[in-house]
Image (cartoon, rainbow, N blue to C red):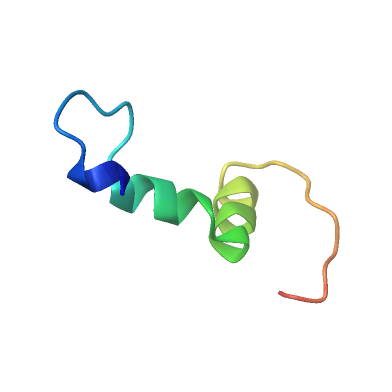
Length: 42
């Protein structure tokens, strides 16, 4: 629905979908040196 609206979008839809990926978030956080809690997912 958001993609169909003509006008300014703060973030592109593919970037929004990437932000929903918890495993990717944890991987990026670790790669920049942030401590992350242990999870059952990774």
